[in-house]
Image (cartoon, rainbow, N blue to C red; front, top):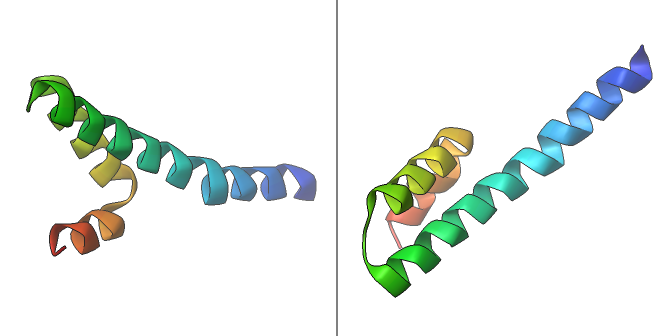
Length: 61
């Protein structure tokens, strides 16, 4: 039971931030190549949903 909780914590602590960073990078890559689109905005909003604090810090730079 404790092992299951540790695995869940590890997933949330590692996989979710990595997925948010990947979505954000993919969004920026798509926008750089083809310009803004619905897909790039959706990826960016999804990354903001997963890591809202990171999104707030990025907007100021």
